[in-house]
Length: 161
Image (cartoon, rainbow, N blue to C red; front, top):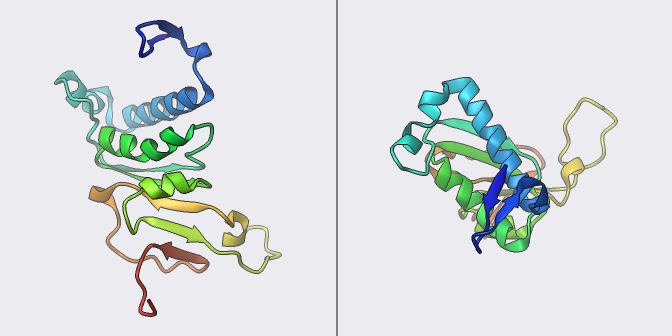
């Protein structure tokens, strides 16, 4: 598979940077899953009409969306995904403040350290200390306030502020 770069040169996929290959991999997997759920006709309906969007609803979870991405891409990745897939809600984790800065205000959640637990099967926010989770799709963002133990909403006003 060949891609054309900004200079008009053909570049084989194996020669692309890790960031490009990471985004391609996520996008192709997302398309594969959408085709599996909705069928190719529904997935590519708008594309056949000349639009660069795929307007099907769903929820996508991406762990460490910032992995292998250069800083400018970390700022743009959420906006790109929500522009191309406007009816999908993206729940992503990241260690990058750049991803968080680009997210819609009030859609970033930080995980606080907790006391370690001895229960192997029990999820604890302490295992994700220093991570952030962002919901990045306004049309499908939940309208309720999550009340998860160990999570705090960043950028949200509280009664104490």
